[in-house]
Image 1 (tube, helix red, strand yellow):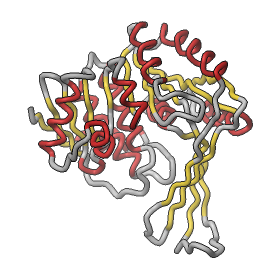
Image 2 (cartoon, helix red, strand yellow; image 1 turned 45 degrees about the vertical axis):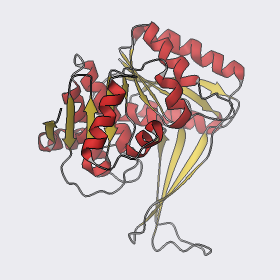
Image 3 (cartoon, helix red, strand yellow; image 1 turned 180 degrees about the horizontal axis):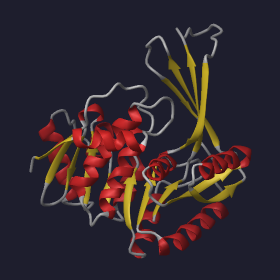
Image 4 (spheres, rainbow, N blue to C red; image 1 turned 45 degrees about the horizontal axis):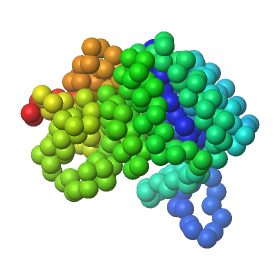
Length: 310
């Protein structure tokens, strides 16, 4: 089983308008609502691919219960700590006239000391029956940035492989516990390493630098240009096929799900990278916060171009 840990899930609400005008009344043509958060999205993609997964983390209030119901309707097991704070709602605005999308994200939290202790105990329990743990997303108010270091250590002590998908301080602290895999995008990798990454060679070298020091496998995603994955001994570059992009929300999380499947297959990073690119492309073809469909992932998979570059 693959567990996902989402400390700051959200109810994702996408509204569709035409010719958005700031400072005026805009008519909404369509609304889409789904469970969100990086780990939650990874669980949704894994479930779509027929893989057993459980979503762990925090939820609170009516919004939190609604998220649990949405996931259970999709056949996803859940075991969340229920918080006093209401789970946040994120609003995405998609302009049907072609303007760039806009995201309005609540911060989330606050989380109490007791709730955090309860979560750590819960995660410790589930690590006994989990093969891989995906730890992903932002952290809510009331949680220290060292939390991912603590959670990676809990998983590793139980013999569970970990995939960490985070940014800024939570990522930096998480690296201290040596997760199995990290998956920053280029911007996140630049912030982590403190340098510009503009060429494929620079990105490949950055991934290898991380794989030689902080993790076993470093994956740096590059949007429509695919991703680079490095271990101490090899570097791969995968490029997804061209697709008509409707929404990029969840594409990176779908890639993480694919990487997890490769990791579950005896650490086959080439397979994971290929699956991740196909899953990310399939999700980009989907509207709003929908994950890609299994049939689209399987159709796109042979079209992913995989090259060993180191």
